[in-house]
Image (cartoon, rainbow, N blue to C red; front, side, top):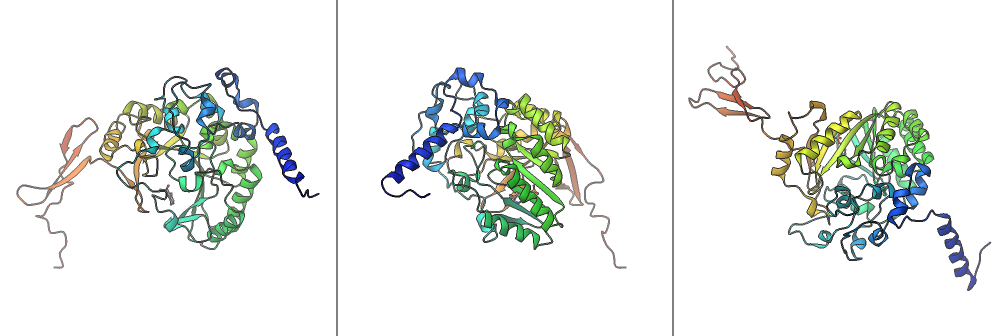
Length: 408
Ligand SMILES: *Cc1c(COP(=O)(O)O)cnc(C)c1O
């Protein structure tokens, strides 16, 4: 039945009120949040309890920054109760608070250009699809434009900034068509937003369609921070879907050891039991993890739970994130503080994503050098180890006295 006339508006409001009533209440006091058990309700219920304005946290956190409302015009806030539980109640420098609460710094002008599409992804997007095809043989498939919790330094603010509904179904279909009709694509990386914000049946459909229509895809992986921000999203049903469609790798995104909770460990184990290898991605953030001890602990905790550190990213020059940027020279120092000092498998590749679509480029200190010899008769190769000891490597240099090639 359609309602017309002056009653129509009222009917709409009634329906809206009913919907609001059906949603679980937000937890507005410290006592309520402390008593909250994220395992006691569905992930969808917890999702609907997310804090979306810093005022909602005034009964929980002290020393909240007094940001202007306009901060939300540029980038929304969303924090699950589980993630709020990890925040220090009194310390504004808490690494969890810094990642997720809006800050006065976002309103500053940094003195260099910040962009919304800093990585030039739109230029490499196949028209009509949400597939970014930048590298040979592999594609980034942006299936969702929402996340469980929004990170203030998000590189995809352009699509995640406001809760704007899902990526259109037609766009998803055209994206799968593109992958299906390009047999050289052998690696598909699902990202977004966060693919795990989808309901099971939707994810089941997308993964199944890729496997069915693109049998040439050898490697299917997912990038997700939901595993970390809303661990109860990982259910036996979800893991069965991931296993059924042979998802081979899930990369999770953790920036600080405080995010490694018993609940997270438990759900990571569930994913691993489905035969899926797991990687860790970290964004190097000033005031969060630009510290050798923090990174060593983060990477060791990761390999303890069988998650292989994969990439550490330089913060992208995205709008409102300049205060998180760690300069290049410092990233080199951080790498040197890790390589050699902790288990080899715990050491990730540090990368910077080049402005405008250059792609990921490794940030690597020089441990091995080659220099011309003083007598001009070849070169000397010198090695430096993690402790700063150096040694010359005879035999590795070029020896100009031996002709490299002769035609007789
Ligand atoms: C990071 C990224 C990939 C995957 O790169 P790998 O180094 O293979 O993990 C693919 N496409 C785009 C556009 C990317 O940014």
